[in-house]
Length: 358
Ligand code: GGG
Figure 1 (cartoon, protein in one colour):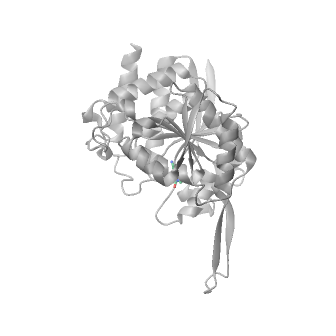
Figure 2 (cartoon, protein in one colour):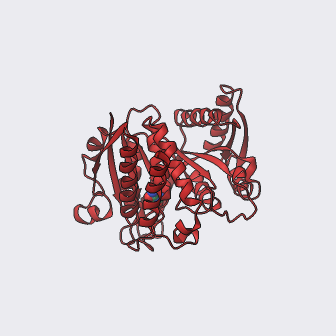
Figure 3 (cartoon, helix red, strand yellow):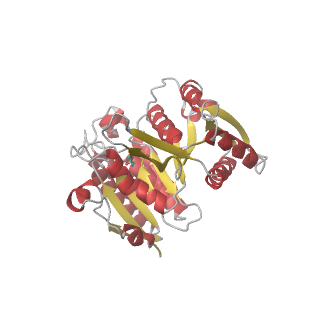
């Protein structure tokens, strides 16, 4: 029996609803599969922990997490704590200290889901966005001086290192190479940002030479929003900086029907440290406690976690179950225009893979 240690961090808002749902699904899947087991330890870190202890996670949190095979995360953010404290104190803290530099965000229109683009077919929107996840605009460089005075100044410095850009380009080209179309779009803004983004473009061209079978093109981030909306079928694998991909992947999720469906993996590709899997959505405090959060993004993130752990068969089986459930509009949560609850969707996904096993 293959056993994996999973650290579960539901954190804030609907994270506390969708992560337990995801763990229930994964436990049932492991029972059905019979070949692997997940040994889960849950951590109560997040905004409530912050209100008690003044920190989002304990000082030895990184040491505690190091021994796990993967981290299953919910969401951060709460109305009464500044967002930069919750985000940097937990999610970015984990991403950066475990060098999870490749953030992978698949986007597809799942069966039964309507894209706001109307006439777009599922085959026309099948993307993977690779977000640089360790530096760029979210490197944490900058500061504030002369606070409260008229001459107050604040800087937010984007950092691009040759090592950081080269490794994310190699990751993205390799991912593009593994997909049938072997096509990568490099998102940039080198017309206006004439230092870091120009180096980004240069390194993209250098790395492209290592992947002669991958076709690639380059797109300014502003024009990319238009192309994603009007010509989605011209895209496949996409690589962008931390900020650009943060924004583009929300757009991608909306174009594929709902951010409630979108999954993500924060990967440490060298496996020196655990990787982290989470829905793209935030804590959604407007719907917290109502039991109507869409758990599909968390389940799909569970598929990505199983893939990463080498449990490809179980991952594919869970994905088939997810698609069978999304195909039925009676099982859609309110973000998709339906009336189903988190509980109903969870039970339906479990029933779907149990039936698949039979
Ligand atoms: N589950 C994702 C999450 O909690 N996101 C909150 C957020 O504000 N993220 C900003 C970012 O992705 O950099």
